Length: 420
Ligand SMILES: [Zn+2]
Image (tube, rainbow, N blue to C red; front, side):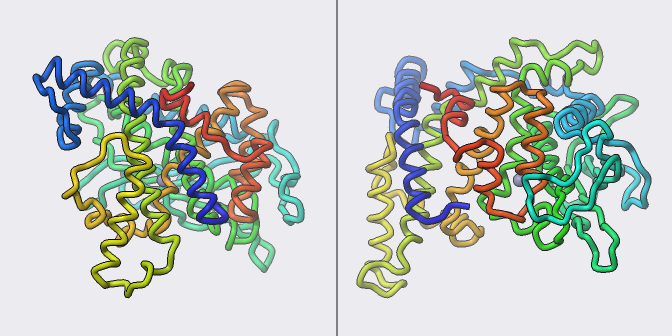
């Protein structure tokens, strides 16, 4: 989605300068806490993890077990489905299919009659089959951990939308897989807030795959979407899990039926934004280092494996740290040797995409904050501009079709408590 290394470097520098005052405040807070509460006058980089854990415990402690009592799986799933149905003009209903385990459920998504429209006007030239009141797609839902199941959570496509050459329209099918703790006895499964975020995240990928209206299988749904834009729809959905108006209705204590107390929610939110300035600068430092070493095809005047190539890499990292870091690590630190993301994790010249996608999804969600979190008109625009378009056009065009402008970093900073 980013056009050039320069665009990425500018984006990162901008983010660094906006986050810096907050990072300086975070650091001062740590130093003060270390001095007054832990008797540590000479705070060093290597004290950071310990001191910040202690500070977090002192300021924002809450029990995950307590939070879990409020997030029963049926209530969360109903809340999630209601958001999707309200915003995206669809209905989700249980359906039947052969499944690989008795815990797996199967659902169909139908276009709502009232919301149904003709071909998507924002996808000009797409020979879209009209879908008035018809089937949009299906998904398998496999939520619980069990022996022998691969750990983690993911959305994967079973098949994509395709106007087949013989004239039949193949509708998309997704599988949404998580590893939540299964229900015990006659009580419903209880989800942690992290579980809820995971579920919403994977559903975002799922909606991108299933709500597409592109008929060419090579670019329908998630196919052909630039990889620095694929996390937009998934991270977008996570925002709802931090929305009080959503959580109020999506929670009910497993024994008393009470909604999540506001005070507990406020603590969760504060803990989420804890030290966000320092965390942002850390991510920018990694991203800048990655982009700078990859923006050159080789180290200056050197063979790639020579000793001065290693020296050059150290120099690049030192330069980035001088510019960005407010808490420089000791000189013997060799972080770059274990930064496996960029030489063994598929993120070479791509580490920035984590922050990039956060900016996109926060800015997209801000449209809902501005015009109403449950505003179906904004939902329709988001569905048509981003979810339906898939990989049929550049992601920047889709974003601009929705937002009317290029992405801005303000919403992300605000969501992370770094406004102003
Ligand atoms: Zn994802």
